[in-house]
Amino acid sequence: RQNKIDYLLEYLKGDTIALLGEGTVRAIGQSKVKEWYVGVLRGKIGLVHCKNVKVISKEQVMSMSDGILTTKNLLEQIALPFKSLTYIYSVVLTLVSEKVHDWKVLANVLGYSHLAQEDFNRIQADKEPERVSYVVKKLKEDCHEDRNTRKFLYELIVALLKMDCQELVAHLIQEAVILTSAVKLGRSWRELAEKSAGLTKHQMQAYEIPHRGKSGDVSAEMMWKPAYDFLYAWSFHYGNSYRDVLQDLQSALDRMKNPVTKRWRDLTGTLILINSLEILRVTAFSTSQEI
Image 1 (spheres, rainbow, N blue to C red):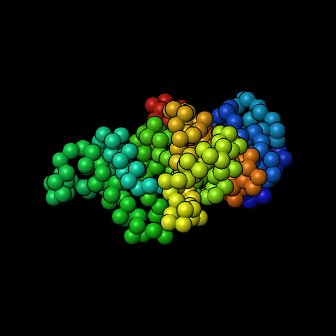
Image 2: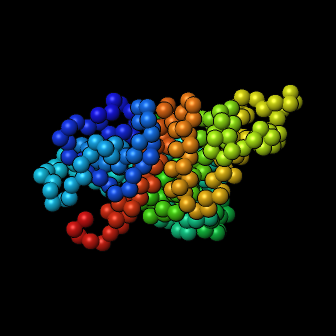
Image 3: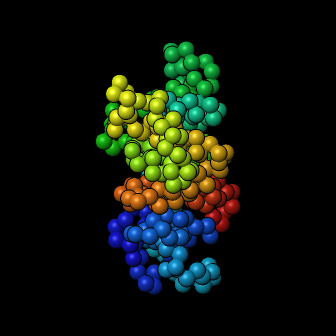
């Protein structure tokens, strides 16, 4: 069993665990990188080490009465990393305004069904992107006023998943993970750049030059900027393969001398999310009465 490590299931010999798919995730455990299934046990979603599991068919399952998982619970759990990820608000606002084409649907899902045309007339928002932007800004303001209990990005992602905007969610995941990774890495980005991309000292300096201060060096507080520039350029080569970006980034960070992923587990949480999107779509949007 795993001892209180975020996103890793605690389990005992003989437990029956429901797997959310046949795909696996590569992530560090207590000390080593292993292959994990995404599973559900006692209503909690997490990773279980592949070698500790004997996969059986549904017909062989004796009882799963304690493993019932509602779509609502699935949605809330897989979106948890977004309570901790760093984001650039202007980027989030732009992406959502461009990709969401019905402000009423977004408003209803977020609990703003009371919004009416008069609200938009008052601010002179006569185009759909402007109306969507207004809804997102209202959510941001409300979460800022109640920052101790509400998290803007988390509530927005849950809403977008309810709307089946998975492509947009994937884009937002990648943006947030790259930024948060850059902030977590700081000066360590040089080690990552050397090991994962084979960057030379001269190439690393090229990323840092635009961010140097009057002293000629990049301050510790600003080191996230060259780290972000590098990670963004590195991820660009993957095109739209966001799953590969997140998995390869996780693997690269895990291989570092002192992996930030040992203390920062939210990237592991995003891998659970992207590996649960298919089952979410099936359970949330299927018309079958059997699901």
